[in-house]
Image (cartoon, rainbow, N blue to C red):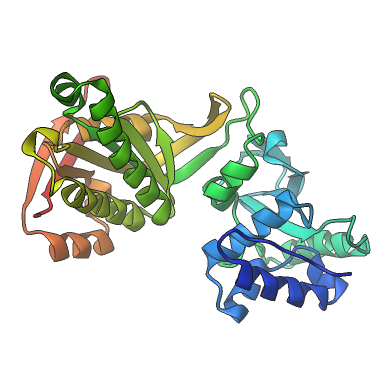
Amino acid sequence: MSVKLRSKVNQKEADKIAAFLTNVSDRLLFHIPLYEIGKAFGISREKILDIFIQGVYDGVFILEWIYHCPTCGHIAYEAPSLHQASSQNFCTVCNKVFNNTLDTNIEVCFSIHPRLKMLDPTFKMNYIADIGKNIRSGKYRTWDTPDAVRGVEIIQNNLYRELMSSEILIGDQSPPLTNMTILFADITNSTRLYASLGNKKAFLLIKGYVKLLLSTIEKYSGVPIMKNGNVVMGAFIDPCKAFNAAVKALRQLTKYSQNKPISERLEIKMGLHSGSVLVVTLNNRLNYVGLTVNTAADIKNTALSNEIVISQILFNNRSIKRTILSVTDTVQKQQIRFKGNPENHTLYHIKIPN
C-alpha cells in the first residue's frame, strides 16, 4: 500500500506523514493517533488536522464520530459523518440517557480508507472490548486524553467547513458546546461612509477591511461567520486566541486607515463573551446560536468606537489579563443588565492605543 497526501500549504509535512503511514503496521492505520504522530514529526495540531481532513476529502481516510458515555466512556453510538449526529444517547452500562456535547464526549477517529487497505475487523472488536474491560476494572473515560480528537476540533476547522460543506445537521440534532468564545465586530460608521463616499467607494473600503478581519479570525484558529456586510462573528475554542484576534484586528484597522483621509477612516467596536452554544445549520452552513451568542452581540453594542469590551468570565482569565496589561493601561468597568436577559453583567472596556 502506498499512501499519498496533499496539502495546499503543508505539502512537505504531508509527504512525511504519507511516507510514515505507508510503512507502519496495519494496527496503526486503525484510529490513527494523528496528534502523537504530529508531535513525533514536529507538526502542529492545526497543520496535521488539516492534512488528515484533506485526506478524508481525497479518499485516503475515513472518519468515525464516536459518542461516549460522559460518565463511564462506553461507546453508545457511532456515525460516519456529522450528518448523522445524535443529540442524545443511552448508555447500556450506566443504564441512563445522556446528552451529547461536541467538546466533552464526542470523539472523532481517522482510519485508512478500505479502498486502500482492508483492515482486520478484530482491531475494532478489540478496541471496543478494551474499553469495556477498563470500565469493569474501574477505569472510566480512558479515551479522554490530550491526544484525542474531539468533535469541536473538527467543526471548528475551517478546511473541514470548506471541503465538507455538505456535512450539515438535520432537524433538531443540534448538539451543544459547553464552552465557546464568541467575538462580534461591527463597523459602526458604514452609513456615514456610504453617504459621504458613495456606494462603490464605501463598499470597497469596507470590503478591504472585512477581508483582513476574516483572515485574522482564521489566523487565531477561529471560525469567521458573516452576519451582514458590516458585522462579523468569530467563534473560538481558546478564549485567549479570541482576545488576541480582537487586539490584532484593532491594530490592523489603525494600519489600514493610517494613510487615508479622515473621511475614509473606518470605526469598529468589538464584544467578546464565553459560554455554552448550540450548533445548528443556518443557510446550509454550520453556525452557533444561543444566549452566549446574543450576549456577545449585546456586549459589542456597549463599546465605543475602536474599543474592545469583554465579559467578566474573560477578564478573569489570567492569560487575557496579562495580554491586557501588555497592550494598555486603560480599562473601564461597567455594570449592566441587557433587555430580556435576567442576569447582571460586569463588562470591561479596553482601549488599545494606536
